[in-house]
Image (cartoon, rainbow over all chains, first blue to last red; front, side, top):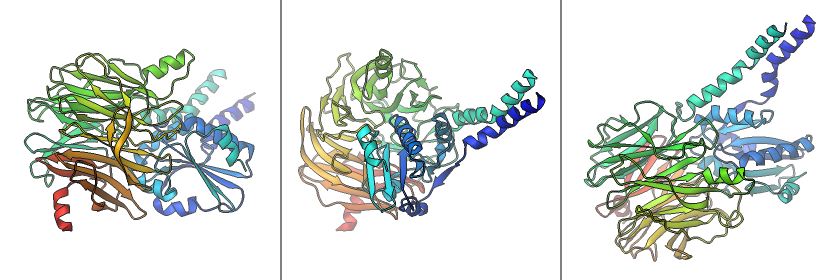
Length: 156
Length: 397
């Protein structure tokens, strides 16, 4: 009985570490070429979102569902356009959305325009924005909450 | 044993509780610079700057066009959370008797929530009244993205984006796109405000509202709405302070359909002849900044594409036949502050040119006019700058 109880206690302590598998890290301008480079296989989905964007939460949930359906083919990365001052609020929102398992980046600059432009020059900063980069170098970029038809279009 | 398990479980979850509380305390109050700022000239040519730092809205002034500023005065003595980035920034305006008015939006703990706050100074900015919450509806929902202006008769007008109708409609099981625009006014110099007044259902959720004064002295608003099935075009209305409500009319017709937050509200300037000069962003065929003369209910006249990819956050100003449009143009190496000028009332514009540059992060430019001359207020990570447009124009000749 005691052994079983200790096991439960240890799991309780270890849980946050497992849940926060990928840390929230700052995204600088110099890291963008690597972020948008075609992956070795499958596709990388860069989910661009912002704290102030109510459309972003269901969009992230839909992308996570898509990724779970194709775990070997889709690499999902969350990128918030909020600046470094919002780090704790972003971390809390990601945890609240149960999206902690995905790599998550936060803009390293206090205003988003330069990073927006470097990630995708054809993007004016509206969120959500979904950028799909495939192993063959092709790209699909869609602004707005994805419709079922658009989700099908980006499915590998 | 059960008690022991409860204690351990509490210990295990304790760090998450600490994070949540820390987030509430720190959001908007961190050490990283937030660049949300507003500037304005008063009637005597004194330049005022309002920023936020460490939970305080701060006011400074300059008597030499921004070369030197006074020490900052805290508007709110008790620190509170403040929206000071993106489309939210503290605002400043002046009363007819020298009053200094300041408004801002205060985030609440819940996502997408906030209150509109206001304070005034009756002694030339030396001291400010205790801040008051302007929105009478105190539900913990959106009352944010405040905009502040003063009518010629001295009425203080504040408009904001409000979530109460969305919440009520969805609670009744019905759909509701976007949020709503509400406003209120004070006819006693900011001592008190009238009841919340709904202007329009279905506004965009997080784009700034542009205000300007009409020739008759009333304050008018230009803002992004949600038309039909998520079409993000703009509306125009006069914010009357006599209890009557203007019917907002659609003034842009891009047809940009998107379930998203554009994060780019419009700019408005109104000529003494009543011409409504507007600038706005839309991306129906790729990102674009437009200038046009608004014609409520009709397509804008003299529409001109100001910028494409990398262009953002335009503002517009007018004086007699001169019209100026300023915006930022970003590239891999930094930002250019761009300008176009018209000398025929906005019918045609000179070629665009860069009036300033910054390798560091910048905030939205703001066009100011004093004694017929245009200035651009530009807050950057390296500090606030005021660029005199006439100097840049002379330097080009």
